[in-house]
Length: 403
Image (cartoon, rainbow, N blue to C red; front, side, top):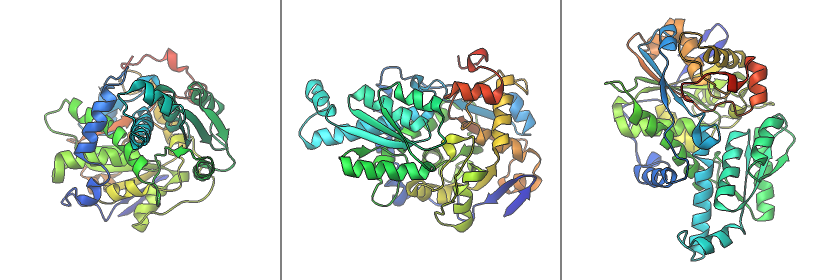
């Protein structure tokens, strides 16, 4: 089913099937054993705390559903985004694996510190992933170089540099910066810590995604309703976060898993085109979108392995939708407590709102007045200057229930 409604596109995934078990192909990417290792590691880090799951009663009424719960990642490790879970965990895994190959145990703190100081990690980023990698490198004692593309803001560049990373600005779009990071790492002997998987590069993105899954497990553990979520709306990008959430729901609930809907920015709708084609499909162009963390033209192969069967639908949203949702949250438009949400945080929530009066899509998704919806507010105001420009208010002036 494809429906053009107003100015967004909605597409049902014909490959999705709730009766398909979470099988060996998916277990090879994300599994319970690796998740428990990630959970134990991350929960032991200084400053770890579960982020809040916030009821949005007013948004639920506006969307004509029973309940909406918003997992607010704005306070995660002081980095302002869920990506603190993935990039930093992957840096730790890189360093511990390489140290153990040389007979150095992470429990030997002096030897491990000497080893880590000789290593350099790098990645391409729209902002938040690079900030997490830089924080992880600073925390665990290695060097770090971060590649950003032409339209990443100076504010995000400065936030990365706060953690001691060297930042290199590249020409072109996000996918161009990914290629430059890999080429430089190959030449210099550095290790790329990317959340994007491609042929020959999959182990480290698995670690990134495994870190992300902790966010999903927290949300499901915090879920206050008697019945589990019936629907989960997720913003995409390369798809690592969405796949981690889907995998957690799929393993936990099996055939009773929630219906999962992906939201893409119109100008970088790689998941819309991938599901339309039934195979990973890149989109071309500058990928320019205010939702900088979602400005990706190619899906992660690892994410596709999970989402091809578990993402039930996908939709595309314009930048104006994201800004509108940011403002609504900041204002407490529907009677909910005001919240600070960055521009890449709201595509899932706005996707739900957009379907409020789309009868055909709601019928296809069995989205109705009894539905219980989970969304992930994946970042706060990670670029405060841009946030103020878009919303018209400083983030510190907005009262938040998560404060």
